[in-house]
Amino acid sequence: MRAPAALVAATALNLPFGTLYAFSIFLKPIEALLGVGRAQMSFVFALATITLTVGMVLAPSVYRRFPPPLIALACGLCSAAGLFVAATAQSFAELVAGYGVLFGIGAGVGFILVQQGVNQSVSARSGLANGYVVSLYPLGAMLGAPLFGWAIEAYGIRATLVGLGVTVLAGCALTALLLRAAAIRMHQETAEKATQKERQWRLFLLLATVFFLAAAAGLMVMSQAAGIVQAYGGATVLAVGATTFITGAVGAARIAGGWLVDRFAIPRVAMGSQLFAFCGALVLSLFPGPLLAVPALAMIGMGYGVISGLTAAAIARYWGRNAFGRVAGRLYIAWCIAAVSLPVLAGWLYDRTQGYGVAVLIAGVLNLFAVVISLQLPRNPAPR
Image (cartoon, rainbow, N blue to C red):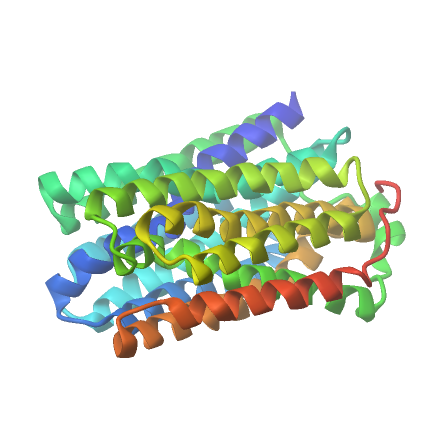
C-alpha cells in the first residue's frame, strides 16, 4: 500500500499549492487593492517561483535529516503563514514577503518531498506516476480558478487568501499523516552506488534547456492567462473560464507527457509537443481575438505541460529513482529562470503596449528552439 499512499499524499499536498498557477485571477483585485501595476504583480509571481525553486534545491538535504511527516507539516505552516501575511498586506512589500517568499519556500520543499516519495514507492509505469504528480499543480489551479473568482466576488481578495492558507495547511497535515502511516523512506542507501554517478553534464544541460524554453512560454500563459484573454477583448467571465480550461489542459498534458515516455522515445515526444505549442502561438499571432485566444493559449500551455511530465519521467530514466530528488531540484532551476524571463517581460510589455502580441511571438520562437534542442536528447534507457 506504499505506492497508493505516496500518490494520495502527493495529491493532498500539491493540489492546494498548484493554485500558484491560478495567480492571474489575483491580478486585478490585488492591483486595485494595493495600487500596483502588472509588472509588479509579475514580479510577485516570479519571486514565488524563485523561492519555490530554492525549496526544491534544499529539499534533498532536508528529507535526509528530518522525518518526512515533520517536513510536510512544516511546509504547511510556512506557506499558510505566508498566505495569511499576504491576506492582511497593507503594502506591496508585505505581499512580496508573504506570497513571494514564505508561500513559495514551503511549496518547493513539499513538491520534491512527495515526488521523491512516489519514485521510491512506484515501480511499474513510473513515467505515468511522475506525470500525474506534476499534473497536480495545473489541476489545482483548474479547481482553484473558479473558486477564487467566486470567493473574490462574494467575500473579497483578503478572505480568499485566508481560505487558501487554511486549505494549504490542511492538505499538508493530511500528507504528514499518510507519510507516517505508510513509513515511506525517501532514500535507499543500498541503491546509492548505482545512482551516485551523475549522468554527463551535457545531458543535464540539454534537458534543462528544453525544459526552460517550454516553461518560459507556458508559464507566461499560466501566470497571466486571464489578463491575456482580456487583452484580446475577452470578458471577465471568459477570462476566468479560460484560466480554468487552460490549467486543466496543462494538467492533462503533464500526465500525457509521463505516459508517452513509457511508450515512445523521449526526443520524439519533446519535439512533437513543442511543434504543437508553436502552432498555438502562430494561430494567435495571425488571428488575434478572444475566442481563438483560449484554444491557442491552451496549445502553448499544453506544449509546456507535456515537457513537464516528460522531464520528471526522464529524470527517473536517465539518473535513477534514488537520485531523483537531487537531480530534480537542480533541474528545476531552469524552471525558475523561465518564470522570471518571459512572464516578467510579458508583464512589462503589457504595461507599455496594453497588449501581448510581441510576447506571444517570442513564445513561438522559444518553442521552435526547443524542437531543435530536443533532437539531441538520447533515447529512453531502461527504468532504474
